[in-house]
Length: 80
View 1 (cartoon, rainbow, N blue to C red):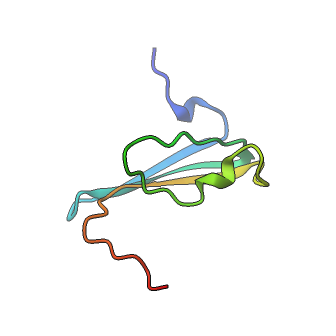
View 2 (tube, rainbow, N blue to C red):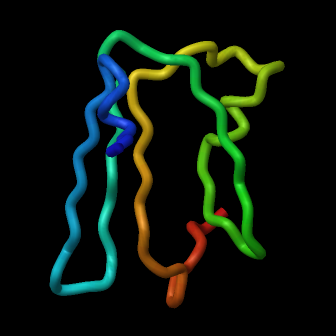
């Protein structure tokens, strides 16, 4: 039996890997919108806007989620 996220009606997935560097990104689309949640794990996760998906916040549905990989090595925070 083969099960995939794309077996869910209305869900589409796209992926790109940059062969010049060890990084890539994956997009999960729900064109008609969907309820979303997040579970962040790890010692030093690099997340952005995931708190908006908490049940007590205003975002009730999403149309897409972007998952991007890579390394924070050499990353410099923006100037204040």
